[in-house]
Amino acid sequence: MAITQILFWALSVLALFSALMMVTSKNPVFSVLWLIVTFFTISGHYILLNAQFLAVVNIIVYAGAIMVLFLFVIMLMNLSKSTEPQKSRWLKMAGAVAGGCLLLVLVAALRGTETRMAELGTGKIGLIQNLGHVLFTEYVVPFEIASILFLSAMVGAVVIGKRDERPAAVSEEDIRKVEEPKEAMNLS
Amino acid sequence: MDIRYYIFLSIALFVIGIVGVLTRRNAIIIFMCIELMLNSVNLLLVAFSKMHHLANAATNPTAGSDGQLFVFFIMVVAAAEVSVGLAIIVMLFRNTHSIDINFLNRLKH
Image 1 (cartoon, rainbow over the protein chains, first blue to last red):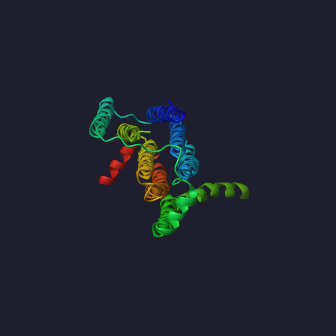
Image 2: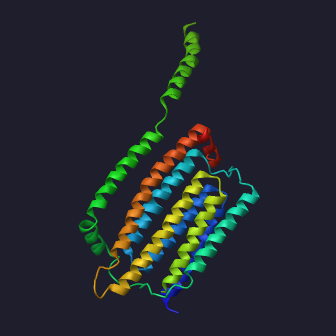
Image 3: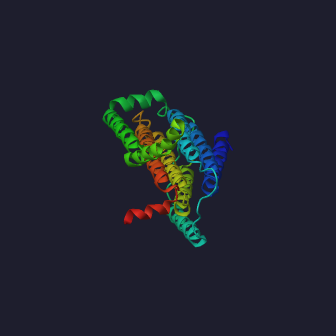
């Protein structure tokens, strides 16, 4: 067995195990950490397929930015305590059975496909020279549209995340009510 | 490596994501399961692009680059989606002091 095949199986087992741990762990912080492990194994698969640009982008964007955003939100809301309301046991079982049925159907449908090989470790299409050339010649219009998408996502996140005006006004009144007796005490 | 192993690995990761969406009630974990599903699709796209490259490299030396660029754009869309989705979750938590997904039932009334 070649070294690439051993790496493939090891990475696959680790990816499935960490994905299962992500779904089943009670604490959201552990869920995030297991998902980061899954993303690293998927990056390992990309390196094995010689898609080095995507491996680096996967680590930077997913493990570096998106998961840190998740961790930040969890820490900000102080959700690390496992106070999640659980679904009933029957609903959980129904969800697992539905997922298992989907797995069964997809595997049964795709079991008889012809065997084609994906090349491991060779080929230059995954390197940044080739991908950059294709991105800025054939795909330059979607690239620019992606920038507009990011701008609208940024505006949307700011607008949604902004605090409402009305509760702020109420709280100012409350502060004034609380402060008035103090001033009266100072005068006396 | 045989392409079928990649297909089965991606299916397994995708189904784990679906089971997570169906069985959990924490909005953040449901969101992470969606990210897992996106990543399984990305892995399959890269494997298919390498398969296509191996078959057609003689006629077109850059065959298969399109699949990897699709993965790049999926990552772009996922990043935008996460920023807006987490803002919605923060707003939900601010209004209800919980991130139970069942609170979204109130959108009906």
